Image 1 (cartoon, rainbow, N blue to C red):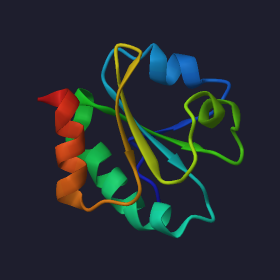
Image 2: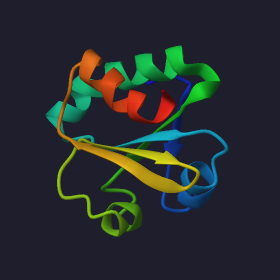
Image 3: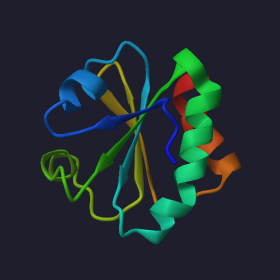
Image 4: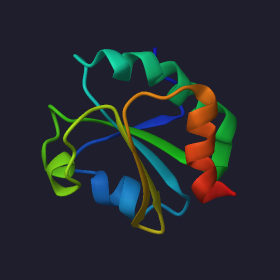
Amino acid sequence: MASDKVTIVTDANFDAEVLQSDTPVLLDFTATWCGPCQRIAPLIDALAEKQGGNLKVCKIDIDSNPRAPMKYGIRGVPTLMLFDAGNKVGTHVGALNGAQLDDFVGQVLF
């Protein structure tokens, strides 16, 4: 079960939730059929729980919301993107472990 601290993003609310966010955003491009996506889901949820107001953690289903993945050239999932002040500042394609996720997010937060 997903954390209630993870924001579900759609094509309709993408700009408001991601690009206009007052805090840095980690966006997980995911799909229900993706095994690696399911494996990192608990890490994403845990990150959302521990970051509090320092980082907004979001997920977008690429099958239900094709515009954002197309705009950002998503070719594989999971793809994680970091946004700060509306700008994409980092991308990671593929599964990662908890330490790698912390390092990736650390690019923006620290």
